[in-house]
Length: 214
Image (cartoon, rainbow, N blue to C red; front, side, top):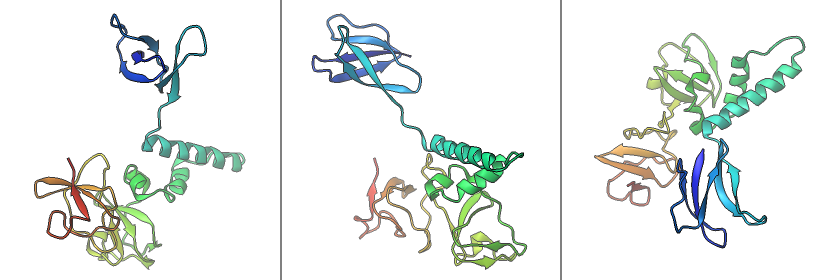
């Protein structure tokens, strides 16, 4: 991709306009071809002609997760002589190590809740009616102990999509909002200032717990 880079005599970059290939008259700068997956971060004056310096773009959370899955799957395949480990098995292994923020981006890696005598371990994540839950204590499932009706056994992960700001829901003591979580409430958007935040945003006395966002 072409990029117009405006810089000064010290090499400090003042502006980078991607997709622009014309250098305005009177400005100190250059037009460079930026390699895919990189961004401009400096100017190299070591040669007779200044050159742009590039750095790798940071990977998104999903790309990092995908990379972990691919690496684990490859490692397992090397260990299993004469067979190929299914990707779903590799995914289930790595999914156990994800944080809640990572887990909600790939909910399909987690199994649907089974109420027919399934033994669940503390910390296990599962899906129920399209919502991701975390198991709070070891137990054997029963058909009437559904995740949405058993707060002693399950905690709903309240930010199901990091790219969407959800309506505030009253959490239990086991699944309060994390620091940095954003919710909509009372016609405003709020950001949690603390972890395990179970208080309603906007009410008197919560100024140290929530701040109005934008």
